[in-house]
Image 1 (cartoon, rainbow, N blue to C red):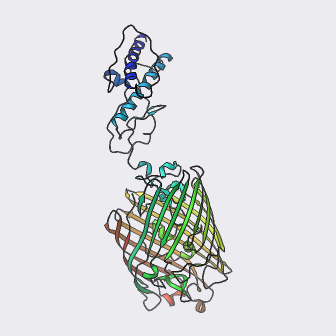
Image 2 (image 1 turned 120 degrees about the horizontal axis):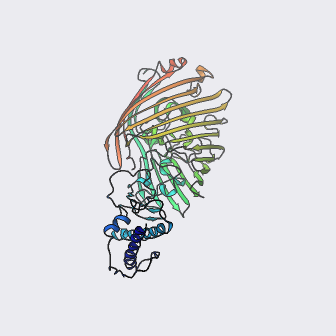
Length: 561
């Protein structure tokens, strides 16, 4: 024991003057108490590193980082073992104190030497518990929005390659949670967009264009159906700007050139219904979207990393009623057609006059909206009167980065132009799941939606949608199943079939291939087919098992990484 104590005292006498002289122009380290000796030790002028046995015992081991992800416990402090072969756990407390003092001063010297060398590949910061050894930082680890958890601190969501990367209405959740309006997607959702900005402001451009030929009811051409060349499309620009330390401002604009590419009566889509053209109900056609489909602003304030309060107004905009609208769901990314249950689930995504207030606590959000119930009229270039005669609420919950759940309900005043005095109570629920598979360029996104329109009396109609998109590198296989109850009036058959509801089933399968991927835009080719299974009472108008198909070229922004 005495021999060990003598060794430690000599170490203190040797390192003390060296470190004191090297750090005379820096903040001085805590002075180490030592015993006086008769033999003075001359200090070297500028020692670059500790040498010999002293380096082996007190210097952290520095290794070249390997090109692999750090182990889960790489962030935990590593405690040095000082002469562990000679100092056992039962040594006296005074010796422990001297060893800790020497270690502390040695670590301070190593920290200064690290900065002088500007070695950015290692993190050797001094901590209260010790030194972090071999702590490499993967380039994008802190900003991986595909695996990030809602429990991380706000800093994890604020920068990606120097850019602000937050959700549109919260500083404390990732941008990948953005859906349509104020709705949520899973955090693991891939983002297809073009982005520029800095650490306080970011600009994003989204969009999707399909150049396609479609033919409906090919096996019953003498009955209802149709064919057309067209180009359904939409474009969205968005800006996020940080306000102070806790505020976030968002502005969004969305347009669609559908009125030009699809005409006033839209494109043929068997069993689709909703909205009007030339004063008549649109049936077996999907209506075009308005030229100005969204013009919104929002502001959120973060009280803590777990609590946000936000407000949102749009003219037009989207109230808190439904999950993410179909064109913004990753599960529907490659499908050019709107769902047959669109007016049971998310038809309010273009509403002229919306005001929403919401509160987020961790991964739970509650929202309330006041909005105009009437859907857009057939003039696709105008701005319609804001009435704020309807209301809705929505509860959203993302239990993990892979899931987004919501339940919403709204009272909609006279949604259709031909039903002036009708009030519809719409109830929706949805579950969206997204996860990466095999590699970062492959994923599967799935959505399950339910919607109910209750207009009182015999008008209570359900819709269910299940869709999925499997992306494997440049190839995609996708599908959609729908069950919708539609009345004879919805199908413009009331005079023939009276007051009755009919069950409609539609199954769509498609394939998509990225033929020309670039840094900013992808060009894809795809084809899909749809089989309908219908009520026998509808067969005189549609035939047995109507079939439809289409081919297309798709243009969209490349995936943001």
